[in-house]
Image (cartoon, rainbow, N blue to C red; front, side, top):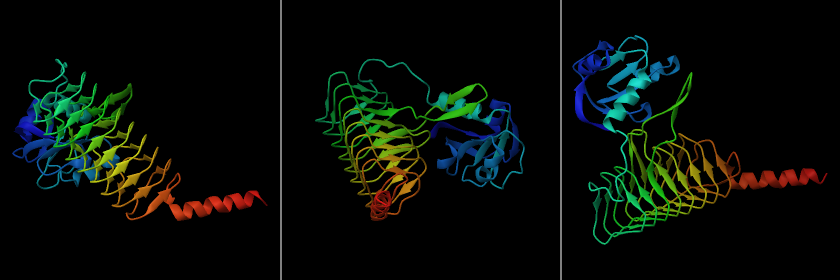
Length: 304
C-alpha cells in the first residue's frame, strides 16, 4: 500500500522514538509486508530466522527489534515491538470506520450498473459500467470492479484478511491495508468471500468465474479465464495461472504457484507448487494418472 504522505526514515524514527541505523534521508513511500515489498517500502522483522531475508529484500526501510549491520541504500529503525509499530502505521493510514448507509458517497458507480436491495458499497469503491451487484452483497472500501462484473447475492468482496500475529497473550490481527480488484467480465457466485490484501491487491483475472461458496484468501493472484467450482478454498498469497479449472471442494495452501491450464479434480488438496498443463488429483495432489493408478493398486492389494 502507498502512503498518502511520504516520510523520511529520520522523521519516522523521531515519531516512533526508534534508533536510526543507516541513511535517514531515505524516503518511505509505501508500507508492505515482506512478501510484497519494493523500493521505497517500509516493512518489519522481529525474528532472527527472518533477519537476513528481510535485510536482503527490496524494502528500503525496516522496523527491527535488534541492531544489525545495515546494508547500503537502506535504513533500520530499531525498537522493541516492530510489528505493533507497523500495524499502528497501517491503521493510521487505513483507519477502521463506521459504515454509513448502503452506498458511501465517495463510491464511484458506472452507467448501467444495477445494485440489489441490501447491498453495501464502501468508501472509495470503484464499480465500472454494466456490473450487477446482488442483494445483500458487500463491496468493501477501496475495492475496484471493472466493467461487466457480476457479484452474487451475499458475497463479500474486500473483507479483512485472515492474518494474525501470535503473541504471548493471543493473536493480534494485522490491519489489512490492501484491496481487491475484479477485472473485466469476472463473475462471483452467491456467498463467496474474497479477502483484501494485507498490503497489496487481491486480484481476480479477466473473465474468471467463481461458483457459490468460494473463498479466496488475502493477496492471491487468480489468473484470467479460470473456473472455480463450489467450495473451493485458496489460502493467502497464492498465484493461480490462466485458464485453470478447480473442481468442487479443492483446497489450496498458502504461498503457492500453480501454472497455466491446470486442472485440479474435486476434493483434492494442494500443498506444493504445481506445473501447468496437467491434471491433478488427491491429497496431497499428484498427477491424476499416477493418483488413479495408485488407487487401483491399493484395491488390488486388498483382494489378496
